[in-house]
Image (cartoon, rainbow, N blue to C red):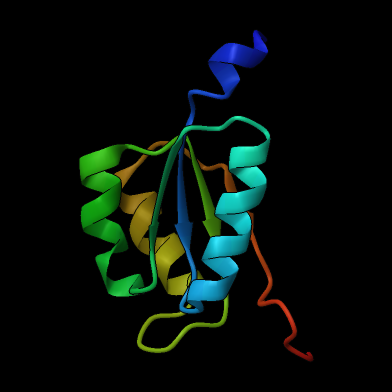
Length: 94
């Protein structure tokens, strides 16, 4: 696959911690990814998936209101994409 095409992928970051989002955005931008979207509100993911049709979702599993597993269930009903990357909460002890 052409790396330039890969870097045009739409990436949606979902994490209730803004610092985690900022870190992931920084890493992705350093690698020249440009279509990066994010939200700290898991209840907005359904709308964002419908609007953006992201190629990749970086998802925190531990969030208030709706956890990452609930988000995945909603996304799977909307999208044929089954590729979700699960991003554990940084600094959280399990």
